Length: 271
Image (cartoon, rainbow, N blue to C red; front, side):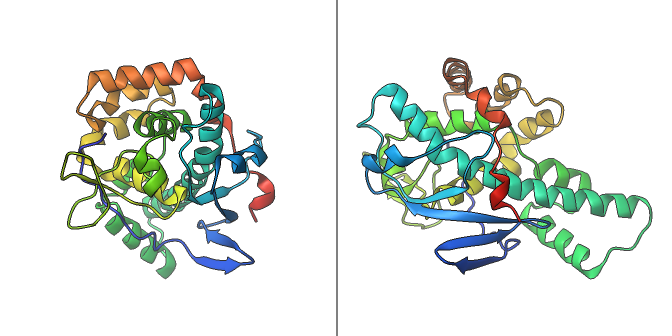
C-alpha cells in the first residue's frame, strides 16, 4: 500500500458528452467512444470478451470481488476489467503529449503560438506543476501496461481486496485532507474511493507523473521501455521498498504481463 500523498484532479482538458448511455471523450486530436458498465456479479464476467489487438474501451462504474474465482480465472478477469481503462488513460496522455511536442517544435523555430496552444500549455503546466517544457514532457508521459497491471494486481490482490470492491481502489491509493474515503481496519488511514476504473487509473498515472518520489522513474522511462528495468525505480511506491520491486518482478514474470504491452483500443471506437 502506498504512503505517498494522493492528489485527485479534475481532468478539465477532456470534453465529455453523454450519448445513448456512452460517452465521447475528446483527447486533443481524436475522439474515443467509451462504454460505461456496472459489474454487479461474478456471473457478469462470463460474457467479457478480449482481443489484445482490438480491446473494447469498457470502463466499469462498479466492480465485485474476484475472490470467488479460481486463480487463473481471477487473473484473466482482472486484466479484462482493468486493462481497457489503462489503455484509455494512456491514450489521453499520449494525445496531450503530442500537442505539447508540437508546441515545443514551434517555440524552437520562433513561431508564435495560437491562443488555443497557449491555453493548452498553460492548462497542462498548471496541472503538472511546471512551466518548463522539457520537464512537462517528462511528466506528461506513460509507461508499459505490464507495470500498471502488476501494481494493480499487487495492491488489490488481483481484485479481491475490500478497497477494490467498495471503492474501485485498484492501486492502494490513500486519501488525505478530510476526504471520507474508505477507512482501513485498525487504523485511521483512509483509502480513496473512485467512481470508475478509469478514474482510478487516471489518478494513479497523475500521481506517478507529479510525485517527487517517482522522479527517477520518470527520467528512466524516457530511456527504456523495458518493464523489468523500470520497476527498479518504483521502490518508493511502498514502504516495502526493494521487496515491493521483487514482488512486481515476480508478478510480471510469472503471469507474463508483458504480452499486454502491445494491446490497443479497438480502432472502431476511435473517430
